Image (cartoon, rainbow, N blue to C red; front, top):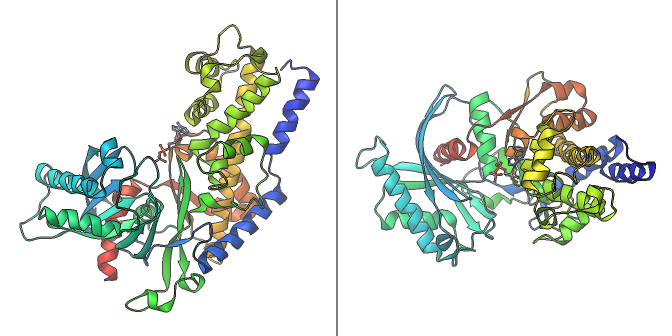
Length: 462
Ligand code: ADP
């Protein structure tokens, strides 16, 4: 580029703040293990390290037909899942819109609507069910709950625009079961499953084993299997029967480093955090996930605009708007391999409202650079969590099997080079040999198939 030396130095100073060297990565891994230990030994810590009461992972031999519900976004999804027992699945599904009125009204109305949707699904979809047969249901529920059994969990808080009244503090499974019973629907609620747990279980079913289910989408989180001896906060009387040997733990790792001990934060991160609806929370997630990466880039670009280094000091309504630059645009910019950045220019002019005459080749290079430094840091930080789970579970010790990681989310699926970046820090932290043995694969429909596997696990654990 033809940037003047002062401007170049300005950019280099920013770039250095986003760079994570090997020692910093190692410090992050060590802090992960420390926070895992604390979260497993006490309630109220962050990350929360939530015991899920799922005590076994599937291996692909599971069979049976289950109903799976997925509540957490714009739509409620109802699926019928048949596990064929040879790592194969058959399923059909319908989506039901959850209106704003239902999201923010009375919880009973919301759960009645869910029951009505199940009823509609069962009568319209061709579910082979005799009158007196009970269908078991798994619910993927992507909100914070405190579980006391695989089929019991109190809602702690709503997120993502849900705010139905008289729900917080109540057992989600019971509210759903009551609604189903009011309509005399022969469905029994068997499992309450977090989306990361569904991801882990689905991947385990299809590949025969899995050490971690991880989401890199709007947010980030992971679930893994730990020895019960490590789960010190669960007392003996937490179980009606025998204490199991293992349990799936939902880490809630988005809250890693909330104490700001190890991740070097830039002024762009601090601004994002200060202006967020949850300052000082979800610290790790704010450096990594789809909801935030575009906003960090936007903060960098605004800073460069204000210093007259970018776009000759011009901005646009879109660039000035909070969360005005979506992570998907970063991904599209990173996918553009052309020398002149044709796609980048199109995004800047068509989506971001910049005047075509204002956008110079240097500006395009700067925008591409900003996307790269933010995404690279995110990917490397993501690798630290994966390394932490490999260390925590000792899964790579001794034998030569694959270390299988199931993933889901737009970022890991679509962002060019995200997996490479994740692997680069994994190599630093666990060594090249183990990194090579690590198989990272998409978990097929974790929320549908995972919930069905959860329902089956619940029956087996009874
Ligand atoms: P969710 O996590 O809500 O289930 P996704 O996994 O699709 O859903 O993640 C949505 C997030 O991913 C949004 O923050 C969005 O900005 C981002 N995103 C959407 N498309 C892409 C893409 N092609 N590449 C990278 N990120 C994307």
